[in-house]
Amino acid sequence: MMADNLIGRVIATEKRPTTMDTFTFWTSENEKLHAFDIVKVEHIEGSFSYGVIQNISHITDAQSFLTSFISSDFGDVNVEGSTARLGMNYVEAAVSYNSKGIYTPVHSGAKVCRASVEEITAALGLGEVKNPLVCGAVKMYADTASEISLNVPLNAKFLLGPEGAHLNISGISGLAAKTSYAMFLMKAAQERYMKEEEESVAYVIFNVKGKDLLAIHEENDFSEENDPVAERTRVMAEYHAMGLSGKP
Image (cartoon, rainbow, N blue to C red; front, top):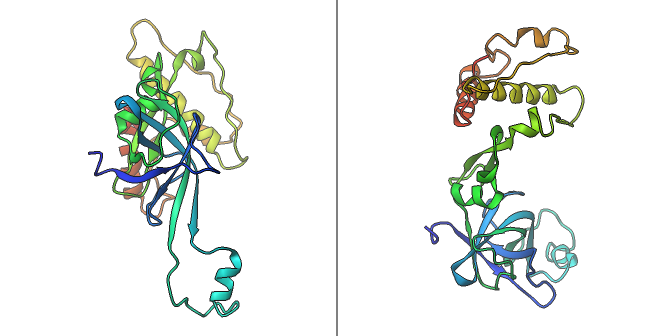
């Protein structure tokens, strides 16, 4: 499994060493990774460290920007270079977790791999959330054959009380994204507490969104989408993966 998911090796140089908090690794220039993906690194005593990708850079053997400019016949954009530059991507990651609590720097040459759902869940501490209420999902390795999706829970007591009973949602005005997310959380809480015998939840909604919130009891027909059937299938699959019915 390790070999199948191997994507690179840790780099530690005089000017850029690995630390307790960060490390850098090289990978193929065609390897598709994204910011916030989680990677797994072999470490000492049979442990594994996990890192959150923060930045991805591409480097070649060109000594300076002028090297590329000159090799293109001094700036002729139509000229193709006679030889391809040797290049690679290097990735900067922040350490988030070690399977045995060992936070010494990872070593140069250590294998870097994609992580599994279970490993990412442990690395992010998602399995330790008390009174879990699903608040969404995150994707890792999106648009690749290794793409995975994880449900993200929060502690319902901090959303509904008695611990916190408060939530701020920020974002660009006018997109209805904040309203949609608030409705999603309310639906998730409603479905969870419908299964509870000792606790329940009820809502008082002050409508400042015109007619939009007057139809929350009706199913979405996805009529504004280019392909309503395909979009409905996709959305319902995501709801079901989070343990939600997708019904009003």
